[in-house]
Length: 142
Image 1 (cartoon, rainbow, N blue to C red):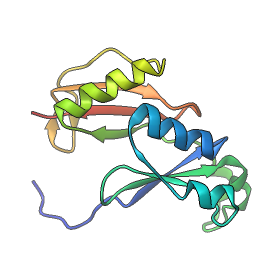
Image 2: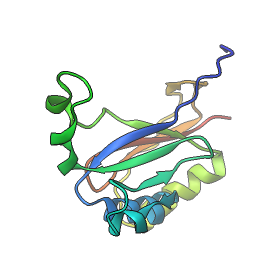
Image 3: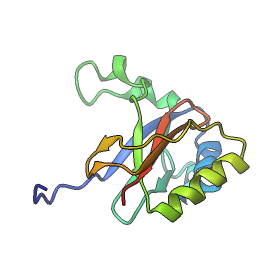
């Protein structure tokens, strides 16, 4: 494996209702919400949820898309979801996530075996969507 110090800091997801999205990620996915109060008090542009100590998901309101002007063409591409984001978990947390999603009536795919990822072939994986249509894969390795 490559010895690299680069880490994934954050992924920005476009959502219709950032507060509802934070609630979904907290209750159904088990992630810690960040800056929700500040968002509702209009002190910040969007809330986030913590994936781990190094990575967060920003829950940007789709209404911000028209302000994306950091690069030429950003406005036209803003608001288009990525194909999917993959969460790598321990086997126990994988099982707990699947159960929590099902308890919250979130449809999940069948379990796949051997899908390739950053750490080789995963033992098990499955997919689900958030309320805004963003697709997530959950997986665990041995």
